[in-house]
Image (cartoon, rainbow, N blue to C red; front, side):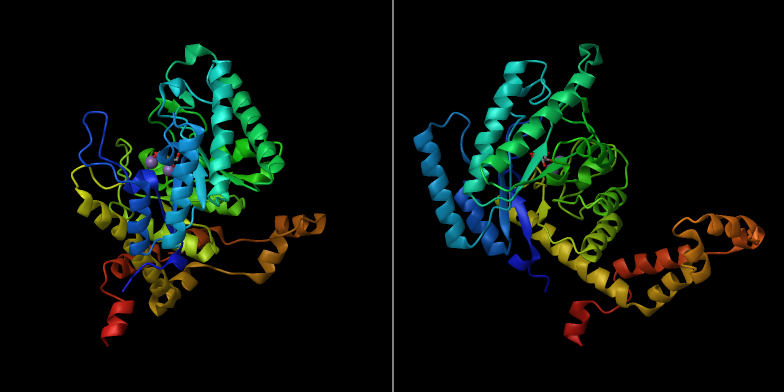
Length: 396
Ligand code: GLT
Ligand code: MN
Ligand code: MN
């Protein structure tokens, strides 16, 4: 039951299951896992692919020979275990060179180095078969607005992305770029903190059709925003190029919890939205096992992310097939063909008719939409006291 298959398109970053439990207050609690070992384990668990930053695989100071050897070995392991690399990205945040930003550094040398590092990392991603390239600007921000670089930073970021889109095309890489917003951490304020600000910025890029969003559950949840609403807006804009799934308590540090660990109801509506929308990209778990865990806990974490997604996907099917829920939904929506016609597509005639139309305002305000009942039915479905789960059918 709920056994992940590669066709479910579940992916993990090398940095996720590979996280060693280091935090700002404490040393690692687990030994590092090698990239080939991670690939082997993820394949056993039923994952589809693995994503990486350049330096998750190739050390930042590796020479060309060492780099090529590591990449060849990794390609071999991927082939042996049938895993793909759908997404690649650049580490523009760990090295002290990027302490005050990469593409938005006030130092032109850092900005140029960030471009160089990203082009090399795009070469690497392409060699491994990646088609989506993520930009998470963790260091693109500031604590000191006296720096006076806000408008410049936006321009520098735009110039860099325009440059890299051209690079991808000139090399024939065909990347689609996914920009990942986050409100804060590690910077006090990160530029482009929300999905909406990313969407607004994307529209200003030279080849905006190549750019979309990589939203992350935890990033919106940290700030108290509704992640599912953000994803809906991104889907509506045709810009859901990738998605980072995890969990988080509101108002806390960046927890990157196992998917569904905290906000089951939000996770359910997110899975339902993704599945209903026909999104067919990777379901990437950008999370890590708790710092308390040993390696057994790491794989329990990875299995748990995928299993919870599949359980929620099954719950979404039950939601759609539940007669009482569907009846409540139907009662909630009031359709009126004539009014729909009248309010869609302006004509002066329609405007005149609408302005003269009589509405029973008091009655409109008195109608009970039945949302309490609908929500309770949903909660009971999630709590497992209604509907046929796959497992109860199997047991019948
Ligand atoms: C980092 C961050 C994530 C980003 C990754 C891609 S790295 O772990 O917390 O949200 O998606 O750069
Ligand atoms: Mn992420
Ligand atoms: Mn995160």
